[in-house]
Length: 194
Image 1 (cartoon, rainbow, N blue to C red):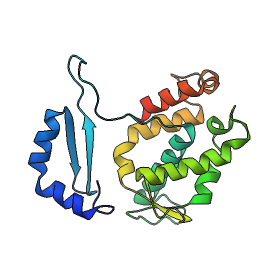
Image 2 (cartoon, rainbow, N blue to C red):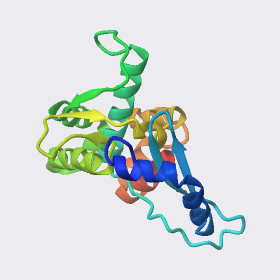
Image 3 (cartoon, one colour):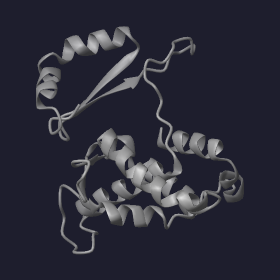
Image 4 (cartoon, rainbow, N blue to C red):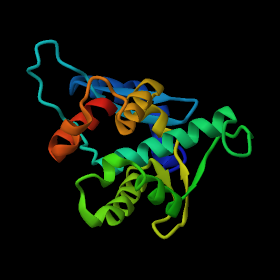
């Protein structure tokens, strides 16, 4: 929940944070509230003995969606550090949909062994990121704003791991092995992003 996308629910979280947190704890969930970014998220609390069923459905990122998230996180980081093309520091970052798709298609991990449907998968990944709230804008918008939620979903350490994986510089993972099997890819990306 973010104040930007749902002000009523954001206010309700702030007003009833203790009650919500208590009820979530009963369900082995943790409420994390980031007042700076005005975002509230739920997290699964790991059980000590592993006997608790997860109430949160884990997301499986395709290579294309992971690439969109990486591009989005890097754009926001560049905007906030002033390392973008114009050198100006900003609180937000905007991306053109066509530019995102073009960048996704430059990653070898996306185009290797994937056939000629890579562009439609990249477009679908941009839409999935918009639906998740990582990219903000109407479905027909050609320019989308990067949501600060990406900082929570993809912290700097995970950003570096994901960037290394996409560039093929991850020493823990053999590039050829990863590209052979899509399921292994998604499990690896899910583990890196988690």
